[in-house]
Length: 121
Image 1 (tube, helix red, strand yellow):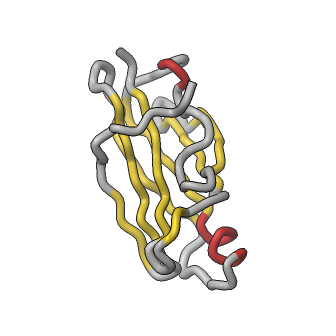
Image 2 (cartoon, helix red, strand yellow):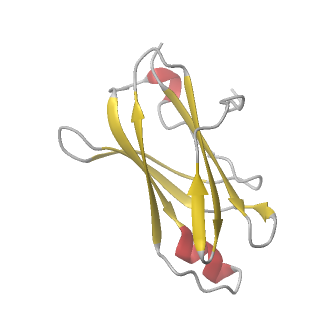
């Protein structure tokens, strides 16, 4: 099974999902290429699959890029950073990768989640 990737953005400053945040997935090797672009839903999850049903999946280093500054500006908050890059190595036969992003205007953190979430069909 090809790697499957989802994300979830939480605004920890206000305790709400990060809705409407631009998110991109880039494959980094052999040269950087944009794999997919999406926007988070009202509950902060990726609207579209990054690798739908494994289509075009290539194992290796990837980078999720989150456009945080526009999101916080829309909420009347000035973010200390513009773009949040999160690097993850996707491997074949490793199942579902879930990468949550917890952010505020002043910082962020991430981890590999449980992968319990799947996009609706």
